Length: 331
Image 1 (tube, helix red, strand yellow):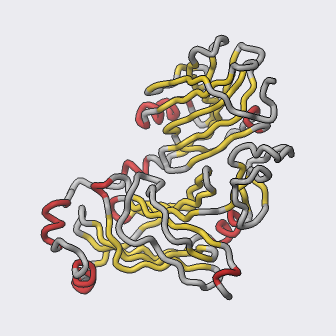
Image 2 (cartoon, one colour):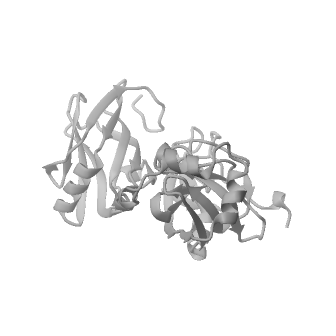
């Protein structure tokens, strides 16, 4: 099968922070079509869930990985050899997620539709985007998380465990032959005996909840919401389901922004930023089901956040007046 006959995707490699950067010795992404695919060149970058860097597109349907890498902050070589849950991957490959309204698309939007691969957002007729990027996140002690990205939507595929390679002298020779520093120099500079994966494992904790935006202003119209979660996932809500968002298992929110109107020339963007420890504690105390309510003042000057009617801790909230075109905007 020729590469041009199969869909393409991009690959990103990230770590929680620069001090947890890793270097790769060998890598292979296995695909359903048997076409070889690989990681980007160089080490990890960016932050948890995104590398911030693009790379040459790969081809096929990713169903596994065989990656050998070196964590200098642990002075340890690891091998991640894993098969992804194939049925789960195939299901997601059929999906295309709504990103935002498209000016010439007038049908009622759904969270996602089974449109198959190669649905690419960007035209006035298309609000949906299919699978675009395979993201690997490397945390301490061999913890690896893999996400599937659909442009603005990112979903965790799974958490996997790399194994320590004890007999690593040949790997050391291969890796450090191309580096400007020796292994001892890297170890002296980067070794961190306290590096543990607990923080990023904890970020994967989920609670059963939904966001709910309310106001006593009868003119309230909701248009879109974007949620970034501490576990590296992202979610987009649009009309009409933004008015009736379902309760489901979600991680602790990191940042949220949403757009609403209460009348002509009264369009606003609200943003909220959360501290993981405080937010997680509030979710734990609330039980296993809840509404995270964002209550906007009638004059749109501020909003408050509540979980099941109780004040919910936020680092900060902000409101900006804006002007965007939505199909159901006030005229």
